[in-house]
Amino acid sequence: MPDLAALAALAADALDALSGRARTAAAEVSTQVEVHRQLLGTDWHGPAAGAFTSALEQRCSRLQDVQRHLTDLADEASRRARLVSGASW
Amino acid sequence: MSSDLQVRGGPGGTAAQLEELDVAVTRLGTSAAALCDAAADLDLGRSLLDGLAGLADGTGGVLQLEDDVVTAVRWLLDSSQEDGQLAVAVQLAAAAYRQAEATADGLWVVTRLTAVAASPLLLSASVVALPALGALLRGGEDRAAPDAEEAARRPATGPAGPLGGGAPGGQLGPGRLAGALAGPAPVQGMTAQQMADAVVAGVPGDLVSARAAGGPSVGVRLADPGLLLSAVVGTAVGGAGAVLAGRSPSPRIARGLLEVGAVSGTADATRVTTAAVPVPAAVATAGPPGGTAAVMARVRQTADEDTGPAGRVRVEVVTAADGRRSAVVYMPGVQDWDPDSRNPMSAGTALRAEAGMPSAYTDLVVQALQEAGVARDEPVMLAGHSLGGIAAAQVAGDPAVAERFTVTTVVTAGSPVGAADVPPGVTVLSMEHPDDPVLALDLAPDPDRPGSTTAVAPTPEGHGAHDGDGYVELAAQVDTSDEPSLVAWREHVAPFLARPGATSVVTEVAGRTVDPTPHG
Image (cartoon, rainbow over all chains, first blue to last red; front, side, top):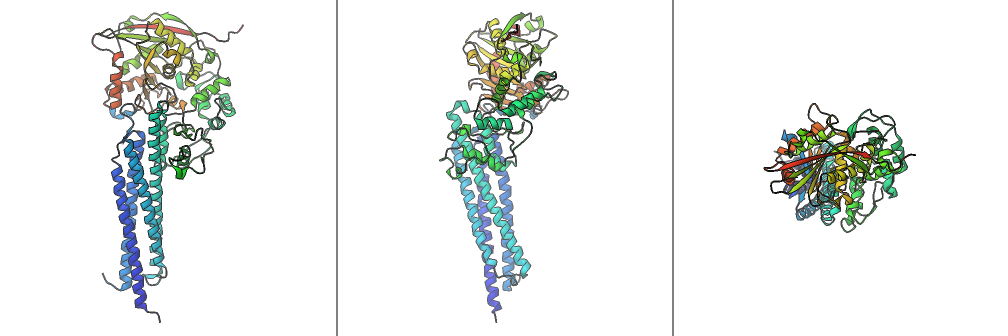
C-alpha cells in the first residue's frame, strides 16, 4: 500500500520547489526590467538612438509581461502545494 | 506649423557618449545571460511535476502547470535572445561611430548602418534586393549590369513626373529613370536577423567573434570584411525600398545607364556657351534674400520662363557692411526632357549629376560665377530645386570647381542628394516632402552628420509633392524653427542674407550646351 500522506507531502514539496524557482525567475526578470529602464538614460541622440529607446521601451513592457506570468505561475504552484498537503486557505 | 517639421542630422543630430554605449552593450549582454540562466533553471523545475498527476488537483491541473512552465521558459529564452540582439546592434552602432570618427569620408554611412543595426528588435522589416544592384555588387564592377541595362530600356510609364516635367515617349522620362534606378520589384526578402547577420559578418572578427562564423547569409559578397563602413547592407528607412550597399549604388547605376546609352545628347555634354541675361529692375533692386524661404523663392524665379530664357542661373553677390562678399547661386530643376535639347537643365544632366560627374550644368555654374566676378576666397552658397539641388551637390564636391571657388554651403529642395559625395567641410540643408517621389531616386537617406541637416514637412495643401512653391513654404518653417540644427543653419547662412548695410548685385546667364560629338 502506498503511503498517500507521504506521497502528498512529496508532491507538495515539489510544487513548492517549482513555485520557488518561478519566483526566483520573476525576481531576476524584475531586476532586468530595472536594468533596461536605466539604459533609457543612455546619452545618445539621433535616429539610431530613437530606435534604441523604442526597443528598450518594448523590452521593458515585454519583460513585465514575463514577470507577471512567472508570478502567476509561482502563485498557482504554491496554491496547489497547499491543496495537496491538505492545508486550507 | 513648426510642429509639422521634422529635422534630422546637423549639429543637433546624432551624438553619443561612446563609453555609455559600451556600458549598454555590457549590461544587455549580462541581461541576456541572466535571462537565459533563469530559463534553464525554471526548465529544470519542470521535472518536479513528473509523477504528480492525480495528486496535484488532478491530471489536468498538472498539465496546465507544465504548459505554464513551458511558456515561461520560452518567453525567457526569447527575451534573452532579444537582449543579445540589441547588444549586438548597439555594439555595431558604437563601432560604426568610432569608425566614422576615424574616417571622415565615411561619416554619412553611420546613419544607415546603425539604422540596420538597431533594426532586429524594432522592425519585422524585410529588405528587398534589387537585381541590377545585386549583380553590380556581386561582380564588384563599377558599371551597369545587364539587369540595369534591361531596366534602362523599359519605356516611360507615366506622362509626367519628377525632376521637372513630363517626358516624350521613348526618351528618358521620369518613369524610365525611376524604373531604371529602382528596379522592377522586390526579389529577395531578408529577415531582420539576416540583416543583423550580414552586418555582423562585415565586422572584424575580434569585434563580434561569436557571430563571425558562417559569412553573410544574404547571398551578397561583402566588399571588405575588414572595414565596417563597407559592410554591404543598407536600408532606405521609410523610403523607396532597400538597398544592398554601404554606399548608395545610385551613382554607379547612373554611370552605368550613361555607359549603356540610356540617354544621349546633353548626357554627354559638359560644356556650355553662355550669354548674359538682362535682369529685371525688381530683381536687381530687391537686395539680399531675407532667409532660406527667400532663397528658394529666387530659385523659383530663375526657373520662370516668363521673366527670362530657359537654361539660366542667377548669381547674387552679397556685400556686407564691412565689405566682405559672398555669393548665392540659384539653380532651377529640369526644364527639358528632350535628349537633344541644348538646355543644360536636362534629363541627361540629371543622370550625370546623380552619377557625381561634371555636366553642362557644372560648367554653367562655373561660368556664371566667373561672370559675376566671384573671387576664389569668397564663400559661395549653391541653392537648387530638384535637379538644381543634385547639380549643386555635385558642384560642391567637384575638385575642379574647388580649385576656382569656395563652395561652403548647399541648400536643396526636393533633391535626392543622399548619395552625393559632398565634402565634409560643406554645410548642407536638404528640404524634403515625405511623399516627393523624386527623393527616392538616389536610394539613400540623407546623411546624418554635423554638417548635413534634413528638414522634412508634409506637402502643403494646394501644392504637388515636388512643387517648388511648396518647398518655399517648408523653407519658411526652416526660417523660424527652434530646432538646434536649423538655428545653427541660420547662423551659418547669415553672411549670405540681408543684414543692416548689406547690398547685393544680381547677374544671370543662360547656357546652351556644346555638343561634344557634332554631327556632320
